[in-house]
Amino acid sequence: MPYGSVKVDSIITSTQTLTADNLVTTTGTQTLTNKSLTTPALGTPASGTLTSCTGLPISTGVSGLGTGAATFLATPSSANFAALLTDETGTGANVFATSPTLTDPAIVGTILEDVFTITDGAAFEVDPGNGSIQLITLGASRTPKCTNFVAGESVTLMVNDGTAYTITWTDATWGTGGVIWKGGTAPTLATTGFSVIQFWKVSTQVYGASVGDVA
Image (tube, rainbow, N blue to C red):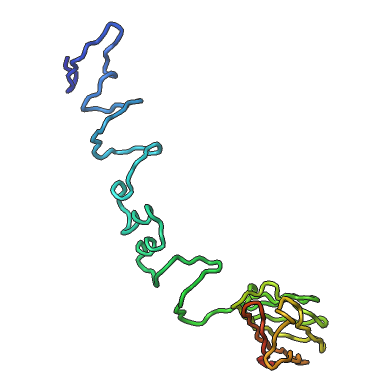
């Protein structure tokens, strides 16, 4: 039985009705519902929704990707990410903002250091996490701490003694017996301007040295 360009060579039972909707022709627009196609060659469909599709290979099934993109999507390593980029510098692992480890970095230009003003208090904290240059104006004689000071960190502290106040550097957070001073003695604070002190930590001990006084 010819119908359009399709020849039907099947037996239609008494309970079946053969209509145009039952046939798939090679021309015209038709909608297939709940049909399974086995290894069809679809050519280039005009449109389609792939929400429920699986098994699409990135390397051969997606076009328009940059060089190295498919490799990175399959194996997202630092090396594959670097290969994907076209303007990277240096080698090694990717670096993120918080506490990265950098090996022999070459830094071009001036490093911008954070300048932090400490809030005065009886046991104010010198915390390198707040900045590498810190200032404090004393409201009374104080005994500061350095609870968060980590080995390898350093801080430049500028102290305005207010009205001839003093600082006691013996808190245990500085190390056994407090700060170990260059020359063996804590600096005397200037009565005007700032006394500038450099601190650095090795192992569990903080060391200090007077840089000098500035107006």
